[in-house]
Image (tube, rainbow, N blue to C red):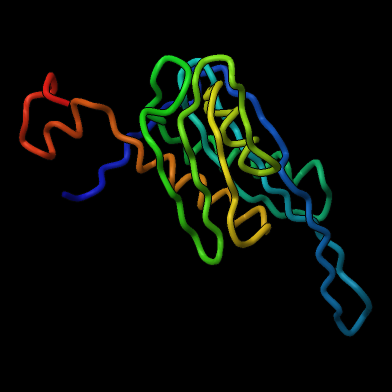
Length: 169
């Protein structure tokens, strides 16, 4: 079954932005040092369960953040969510990083740290347990989190894949 990504229009969404990391990059050249900045940003609409991320690079921090936000708006995904949590457990992987996402009961809150928390809150998931395993590199952690979120399926979708009636799940 080929993966078909839904194209989401960011104009009708109330997107919130969160800067996850800013990295100062120095390139040594013949005439001295060239300084630039790389910003990693997560954008999302918690009400519509839509989230995206991107990296922007520029000579100044505000320009890098602005570029990252514009790119992230073009890379939005919709997350399958039950009323307040995720439908089932998922393990996202990217590089040396793994992120475990587990559903939590109502009132538990978001148990997540760093980059995972930024993604989960931007997606509008209120109660979830997460564990970041392996790398602490925010780029790989965010990509692993997105891999986990893309694995989430609704009951009807799982029933269709298995070829059974949704009521039997």
